[in-house]
Length: 151
Image 1 (cartoon, rainbow, N blue to C red):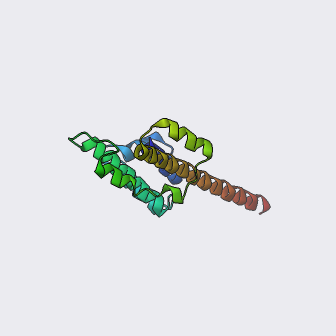
Image 2: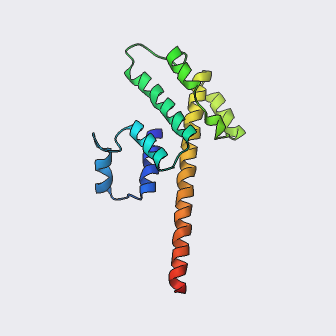
Image 3: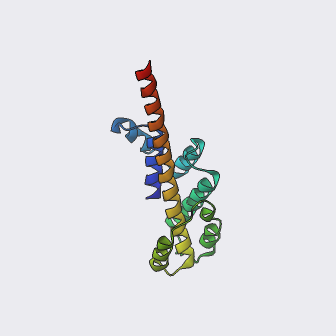
């Protein structure tokens, strides 16, 4: 789901809404067909900060470890737990106390809970980023309309 949110943020920033323009971007070899590519495009467009980019890369590596391992993995597996320890979400997102309580109930495994908290923090950060962009666009458009009326 986080990959989909990232895709929507990029599309909103690029102001692409026509399905015929969107679909080829995400097809097999499309320029936006990989999570890795989307992470780094979002960073290049200044939609996310370096810490968010790094957290997304950790999330991507953990996702890939679970998807491609021939051995059973858990969040207690050393490879996974070491990646999760790299997460930096606490430096850019403070969860409300009600949110923290919900995560406590979600799963008893601390490493998995931390991973889920980070996914949530990144999603919230992406949504805030696109809201800020839309607000700037609206302010710019309003100012432009005012100059047109005044001219």
